[in-house]
Length: 283
Image (cartoon, rainbow, N blue to C red; front, side):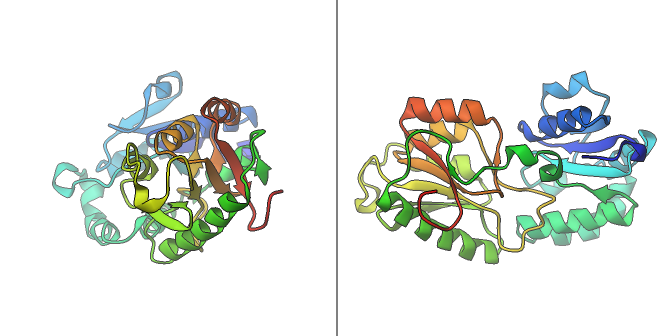
């Protein structure tokens, strides 16, 4: 629970439901929130909150709006694609941090986000992780649905977990698809949706027939959990179904279920399981 004496929580909002859920959780805890809506990413929900719209390159506006609102705590939440440098149109502060930002853009996502955290902290803001406010949305261990993964599914999960850990060590991605022990796809900078979309309609799948296999998602080893914890929701389940998978599996306690009830309903309709994996057998 946040300490309301520190002023409103600043939510720097990208795409998706996560920044809205963070703001709503802060309100439930008795606090207030000021949203910095990143142009082209943040969605219409911000109109119901005190907010400032800023371009990704308007770094000075981001900082000044947070200070004017009295924010000392900041949560970076929601999806962003990497900007095209010559389209950023940075303000004066953006130009001052441009050299540092260019170095960050050459790193993987975790390296980029750690660097962004340092930029905010150097200016007196304290970074808050979305999981600190949304602990109840972290995936529990075991099945979210009546359907459970079988022995072969869990074998695929164990293999996928090894692959995701290896990818994470070089700061590449947070997800993989494995069927019959074969790695069908890995997540890169394009994200989970793009990874799953490439599998749709491929009934060959390297000898792994449809339906079979799992999507597995987990944070990278040593990831700064204040930013970019992986998340799944109903759309993930529907894409997994279209990709011909048996289920969606996440690392228990470290991945967000953005709408648990709707996600479970989508999984039941699709005939898939959703499962929180703790590194052991069926919970």
